[in-house]
Image (tube, rainbow, N blue to C red):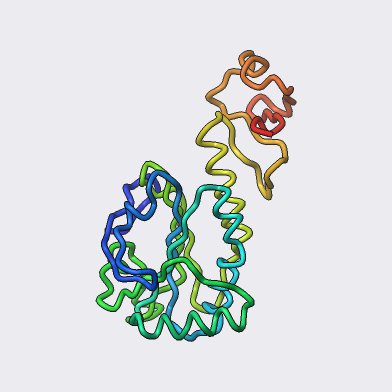
Length: 211
């Protein structure tokens, strides 16, 4: 049965380019991004892993650990990382799982047979500190992911986990947010002292509360 939002992310042990890991131990009490790649030495994946490495400080300041996966073996990972670092001006120092037996791929439903019987699709999972799945995005093998969008979603998830707000379309960190319907209009001034606007009874906005 495939994972759904709010499900507990399955724990696993795996061999990676950074040694053996236990997924839960690796994440600790922070956030995590687990994302899969169809194969080593493929052009789109090379750019994705390079971009992730370039954004290391952005993930770190959000208390997010990243973990990649490919169904290829460790020796191929090692050679591929050298190529990534060379061509993408990056330093890949996060783990890449060697999922030859497809154990993790199956746990997270990363292989879609109608797309490929053996290669994973571009699945990405954001895991919260409670080890629950907060977001899932699946791209076809031909389309590289937008990691600026991944960071934007993490900003939204972390904000909305703490405050009774939601983020509107195309929201970016620092912009106004929506007060959820769980907060009565008369309670907004006390809850959100920066001010608010009532556009419709169901659409109330306020400046981002943690800025």
